[in-house]
Length: 468
Image 1 (cartoon, rainbow, N blue to C red):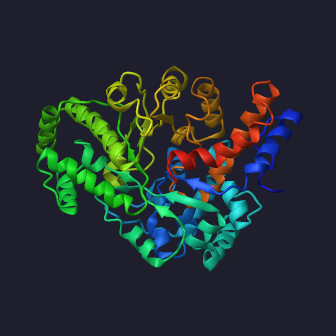
Image 2 (tube, one colour; image 1 turned 135 degrees about the horizontal axis):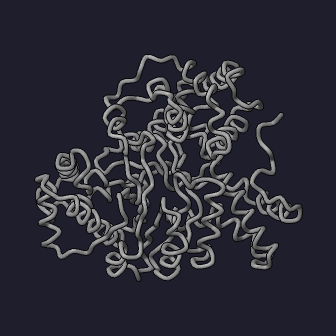
Image 3 (cartoon, rainbow, N blue to C red; image 1 turned 60 degrees about the vertical axis):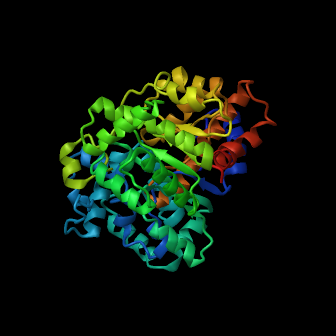
């Protein structure tokens, strides 16, 4: 039995399903715009084959290993690297067997949809993964990975990716992007400027990070003016490798527009490690406004990803480092938090600020009304825990009436799991077409408007919003 239902995620009522299906057929094969994500640029630079199925599907994907870990599976047993870079001496086939034995834990989750899509459409696996067939499926995928057709660049082209953005720290030297550029390969892999390590006073090694940024930029980052100049320099460097956006993963959406002497004093305290938690938050908030002003000068789109209590487990952070599945959503205020930034630059139509949230209660109450009136604001797609069929449908239902479609930015996959990219975009296209079909069926959208709208949701909005 095929592991994919060709009508998955479409409405049940036959006539509405047919309408959704017709819309989807018109957009299913559009190129993929992937304007925000965390794939490794080294893959495309070196174009080496992926080591094995476990290294491709299990160890880099926190959606997968966090679910197994929640049922008591140790991260070491899944080959997840430790904080010092070492990896436990575990056979990749044993990791795969452990993964397959726990595959039932993913029932009903978006991860199951993505994995089944990748297994079937990329590797022609037509049987649901289980402990019984784990070895056979491992061998099938592993054999494919030994061929040139499954190297990163070949898969990039097979997936019909028009552009993909990775995300690098402000103090990354971008050597892999340089290697990609120098190789002459025409695949469009660009970077994005992620300055958290040099903006957040509570980030480990903040003062050392700022000093390194100064060295890389040739600026004196011991001074406030030199620090701002270093940011401008690094942003231009990232732009030279294709960057069209910056990305900011702050704990809150707080912004500030402080007098320059007050900001400079906070910066000095941050370098000295004497900021209180309140002062650190104020400094992060002020830097969002500084980043927005810089975007007016250099054209980079500003993305704000707030509201995550990152690295909630001190034990896992110490043992395995950041980004190991222990980032937990928190309640997030946007109305008051964004006002200083919006008072400063909110009416500039030549600025694009894309807002994300992990707090769905803010969709209709705060985010849609804000994006529905401020020229600079756009709403990012459902993110992280809400990157799911239900999450996407709730987003459309709760934001469209107030913000419309054109104050949103289409879809981005925000993934480290390369083979999930086409699967995630396919889910978004199916859900959006289902939503449009329901609007037609209930008399809220004319049928002749829907194809163009479906095209924009799948492709056009992201391309325009991210200036690609």
